[in-house]
Amino acid sequence: MFGFTFVTAIGVVAALLTTVAFLPQALKAWRSRSTQDISLAMYALMATGNILWLIYGLLLDSLPLIGANVVSLSLTTSILALKLRYR
Amino acid sequence: MFGFTFVTAIGVVAALLTTVAFLPQALKAWRSRSTQDISLAMYALMATGNILWLIYGLLLDSLPLIGANVVSLSLTTSILALKLRYR
Image (tube, rainbow over all chains, first blue to last red; front, side):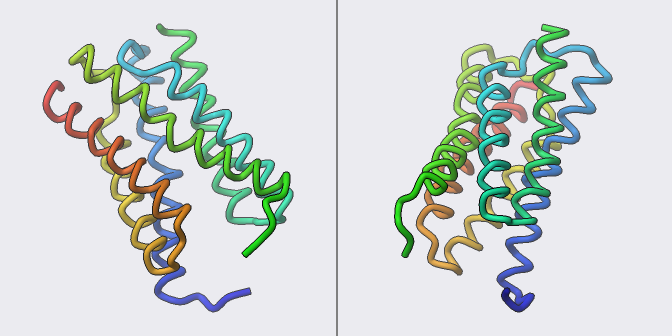
C-alpha cells in the first residue's frame, strides 16, 4: 500500500506509544487497588471511543487501526472495571 | 478528498471521544490536587506519543491528526504537570 518510509516509522512508533501507555496505568490500579484519583468519565469516554475506532477500522479493513484498538480497548475497559470496583 | 459518509462520521466521533476523554481527568486532577493513583509512566508515554502523532500529522499535512493531537497533547502534558506537582 505504501513504502515503509521514515514518515511511516514515526506513525508506527506514535501508535505503539499511545496504545501501550495505558498498560502502566492498568497495572498500577490492579496492584494498588486504589483508583480514587482516576476519572471515571475519562475511561467511559475512552473505551467508547476505542469501540468506535475499532468499528471504523473493521469497516475500512485497516489492520493497524483494528490491532491498536483491540489492545487499547482491553486496557481501557480493564482500568474502567478497576475504577468501578475500587472507587 | 472523500465524501462525508456514515463510515467517516464514525471515525470523526471516535477521534473526538478519544481526544476529549482526557479533559475530565485533567479537571479532576486540577480540582482535587491529588494524583497518587495516576500513573506517571502512562502520561509520559502518552505525551511522547502525541508529539510523534503531531509530527506525523504535520509531515502528512493531515489537519484531523494535527488538530486532535494538539488538543490531546495540551491535555496530557497538563495531567503530567499536575502529576509531577502533586504526587
